[in-house]
Image (cartoon, rainbow, N blue to C red; front, side, top):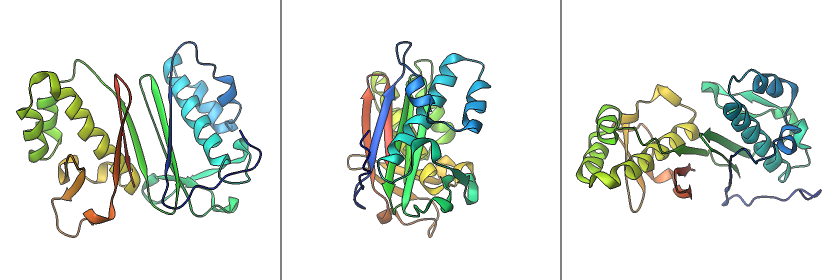
Length: 222
């Protein structure tokens, strides 16, 4: 990592991800964590969960240190309204924004300036029933899109919509306060629509999608 921090332009969001596996060495990222993060990592029952936590938080700290003159181990965070984590104001980086996500076999982190952002990465679960899950949780238009596809394409479409929804909720910090069927995505090109007028402004949002591996899907909301 360069000793001189760079600066992300306001119109740019940097997204990085790490594919996890038994050969991945954690000490390099684990050394960046603070005491509270190490304590939490030690409480995980399964190695895979602990490795994902360490990788995600270590990656975040490394990425932030490329943008400001703060060492990776010196970053401090607090919970904003709604519980969304943010950088401690005492560090003097009011415009830096970040989001991180981890799932089976992969972690992802996004860093930008000024705009709210959220990232979500998900691992495909072959036992998931995409039509039933979409009908239960998604907007009717989204469930219809998934149900209209050949069976072999339904999983991929389900995870496209799922990651977009999770990325949006992470960006807003609203979490479960907003039901997943309260807003809907149209695809190719991606756009968002809201069930209630005044709930949010669709034109304010931009989205990006990435397939970081054959069994994972990633989405970014800005």
